[in-house]
Length: 329
View 1 (cartoon, rainbow, N blue to C red):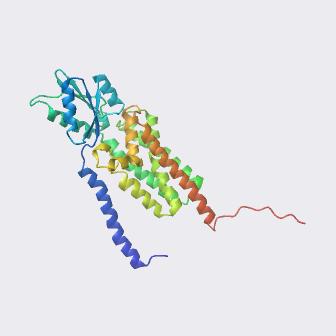
View 2 (view 1 turned 90 degrees about the vertical axis):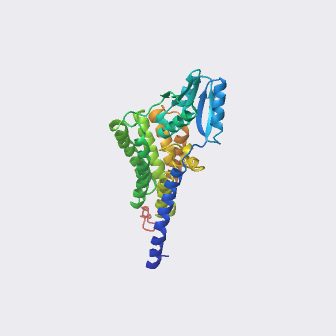
View 3 (view 1 turned 30 degrees about the horizontal axis):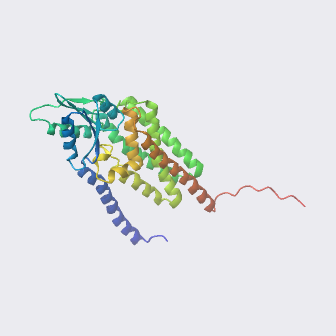
């Protein structure tokens, strides 16, 4: 039943402030509660000093998840494999810190402050950046700023396919085409032009394309199943929740529980993790976020096909298939 003008007015007056409040909560609350929560860090060394250092980390009530390694080489390998964000190497001359600013400058700075605070007064802790952020983007700002535009691109693709009445296979082809083109153009900007991504070019382009498809297909799929409101629901899920919960500007382990986990199960969070892996860590730890993106894309495309068939069958204006003339008796 269509809404009366007074009811439409009431919907606007109530709905817009509600959405704004939800967006403010989703963006501001995680930022205000940023702190390490089971943040994976390594400690290399077997001396009693290493045991004491581990005890100091564990005293911070679940802030760190400590991994022990026998040597500096093992700790470096763990950082490069994205098993830990950084490691403290205990030597006879004192602790040395290994970080990976490419894995997150906020985490690298946090580890530097934590280790320095526990060092003897007046001493300086040597820091080695094992996987450094590119010189053209030392703070990782480009990667952090790229996820929101990619999510918006996916929502726009899903909305356009819906509003232009593309159904079934045509909608799927349109979504795939948009994803591929955005992947190529975005990689040309972030890698070839800005130099902020330094991994394999085609792997980066594939990750970005998969991101756009993993956002756009569910949006179009929801719209195909429940109608135009599905666009708003998809945008709410992908942009207003997925983007601030992604942890791409810091780390999922720095967000309140269970926000960090939820964010990694949504396309923006999975995209940030996968893009960071392929851009700086030779694809290490990219399998799980790739699977997450693939599942979202597949489910979205299935919904697009199923919803398209249902709507075609229910549309009385759809042209009937041609019939052969009856044979004369």
